[in-house]
Amino acid sequence: MSTPFYVSPQQAMADRAEYARKGIARGRSLVVLQYADGIVFVGENPSRALHKFSEIYDRIGFAAAGKYNEYENLRIGGVRYADLRGYTYDRGDVTARGLANVYAQTLGTIFSSAGEKPYEVELVVAEVGETPEGDQIYRLPHDGSIVDEHGSVAVGGNAELISSYLDQRHQDGMTLSEALKLAVQALSRESNGSQREIPAERLEVAVLDRTRPQKRKFKRITGGQLSRLLAEGTTTQTESESAEGPEEE
Amino acid sequence: MDFLSEHQPELLPGNRQLPPTQGVVEAPHGTTIVAVSFPGGVVLAGDRRATMGNIIAQRDIEKVFPADEYSAVGIAGTAGLAVEMVKLFQLELEHFEKVEGVQLSLEGKANRLSTMIRSNLGMAMQGLAVVPLFAGYDLDRAKGRIFSYDVTGGRSEEHGYAATGSGSIFARGAMKKLFRDDLTEDEATTLVVQALYDAADDDSATGGPDVARRIYPIVTVITEDGYRRLTEDESSRIARSVLERRLEQPDGPRAALL
Image (cartoon, rainbow over all chains, first blue to last red; front, side, top):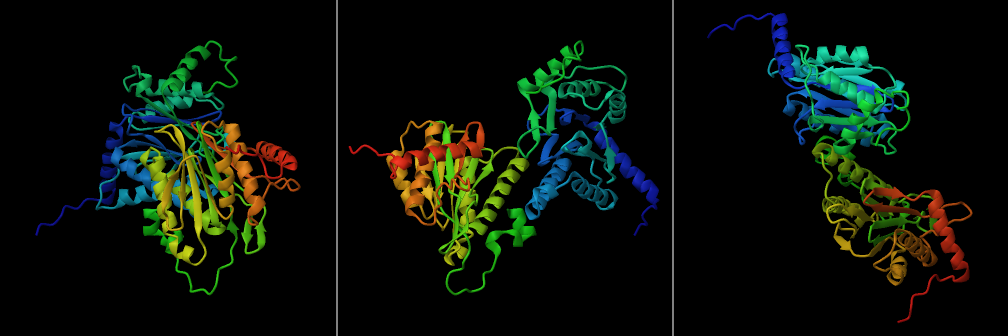
């Protein structure tokens, strides 16, 4: 019987992290931004059927970059966790923090278990509050750590480039159309410094809108509404002062 | 629900063992629910009384709930069990929608409710029956539809109008005489209040509009735009106008003889 090679734990973990990072980097990136009335999710997604963003519960949304089958699995797990919590206790007892903890546990266990390959996913769990101060955004990298984010966050391929671009330009209290426009600008930056055009049909956009009268705040923005919001962004650059007031819908 | 039954079966209503009891278990019962369809949708309404034997257990109980964006369920029977059943039903519809990314068809929702009622059969045999009325807007067929149930989970689609609960015989009689195919939304909401008034008139377990306490029937409308519950102002206005006419004509509007 041959003796297996000795691999130091540091090396093993570094290899697994490298593997997961490469897998995530292959996917398109996505961004999550706070705006005045909530949180907006923007990503490039040519598919109409396979979503990157989805609703978990009343105020909680989910975004994922990486391998579809792996994050879909986590998404369904999250929906089950949230629905079970809400049914057993109360709808108000389902929080993004609790959900992020469950995800961190799951990802961490899979990452460090020798029998399984690490998940090639990076998640964002966001909860919209009654006020912008109450908004919570958590980023969950492949290894099961949790990063509490504010303002803007990017995950996926070009995440570092995009998030530094967003950090410089994102402000509190942006309107939906301003935030959307900024997100698209950030996403269209390439690592070699050039820009490319992302048509509206290839964008997947969803919001957690705190002004929605329903309990469930998650809403997808598609078609005419999306192109209207994007067009509005171009006109408001010249007249940004007068752009205040109701601009959505 | 499958997930629940695997992981925490004690949370499901059907999985409880009942100790053998003698006589009828006393628990609050909800009474009358009525539904009427009109060309643009469907109206579902319920009175506000819950009774326990000959006692009025609650004057302002709410028995009509939204099941999801395009459907609602009204419950008659044991209030505690019924409310729990509705909660689980709402959860299931929402869960399905989130996991699959699309809503269940109206037919699918009605079938699901049927299974849930059947799982309560053991309780029903001991006098703790739950008999809901389910109404919704069918987006595929672009019309409002009503489904009624019996205690064993038997489901039947009703055309035009339907009622369930102890006052349902009187309410159905009233609706039979007042219903027309071409009702407007306003007429349909008035019709259900008339029917509930007639039910309260002849059935002691059904509550009429309580002007002194400002407790009026719950009236909900489901159309293409989704579920909407009439505000306190709207339902009180309808109830008051019905009441006012009844001061002159206690038996309500008269239908033509021939």
